[in-house]
Structure formats: C-alpha cells, structure tokens
Length: 202
Image (tube, rainbow, N blue to C red; front, side):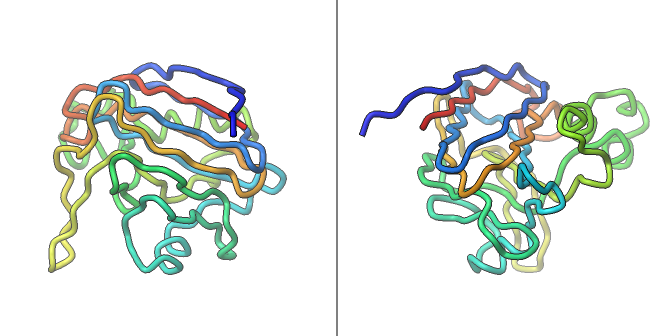
C-alpha cells in the first residue's frame, strides 16, 4: 500500500523537535550519519498525564531493550506507539537524558555551560504545555547501553550506522518530544552530535 508523506524534516545536531502524531501515522527516524542518540518521550495528545512509562514498557515485554514489535506503554500499561521496523535492533530504556547537572557530576564543573537534553525537552515541551514535572525517564533510540551481569550500565559506541532507521506507529494520538542529543562527553554520539531525519507517513 502506498504511503503518503505528511512531513519530512531534518533535526539539526543538538536540536529539539516535536510533533503530534495521529493514530495510525508512522514516524520513521533516520540516523543520517550514524551513532547519534535520539532521546524521546511520548504523551497522550489529549491527556499529557498519560505518558511513556519505562517500567510498564519493560515489564510488559520482559526486556529492557526495544526493537521491532516493542510496544511503548503509558503508566496504565496502555499502548502509545509500536516499533514496526528497526534496522539497528537494540534501543535503550535505562540511560535517561543528560542535563547540565548530570554533566557537571559526571564530567566536571567545566561542562556546566554545555547544552543538554533536559534543556531541549523543557524548551520544546513548553510548546505543548509541558514543564519539568512532566519529564519522565525517556527512550534513547540508537543509543547502546549494555548491562553487565552485576547490573552495571555502560554507555559505549553505538550499533547504528549512516542511514539506519526505525519506524514507530502511533497507537493513539500522541505528542512525540525529541532531543537530538547534544552530549559530547561520552560515546553515545561518537563525541560528535549529528543531524537526524524525521519522516511522518500515513
């Protein structure tokens, strides 16, 4: 079946992006240059108190990693979006979003001025009436966070590559809130943030 392109936009390195995705529409995220982390949150477009829940998603699918077939759920366990295609095969649910505070703690006070994902979420989320109290643990698409047997998390070189993509189908009307991660202090972006492409089809 032929798909109609509703939107086709490039999100610059380090920038934020958002859109209301209508039920049944598909968002394809393309990692244009590879090894870019795309921090993402989802909210019910009609009731933003119903938002992405990492615990509900992980518990329902029995895995901490996301790939084709994963259903991203809200706090009540209801579907928000479903991953319908994935060329990478492993997306993070645990690493969270960088912030000016976490950068300072992890990498030193000299990083305090660096722009971070939380600031992107706050600026872009304000367009939808979202504030700091609405931020919850996010998905990190394309980010590689292996977990050792003792529970230790790592942030290591990504598994993605130029042009790799994944597709998400909206299971109801959702706000998609993205920070195209500006992190330069760890390998999540290969120490070099790059642009991504957002294609919405129906």
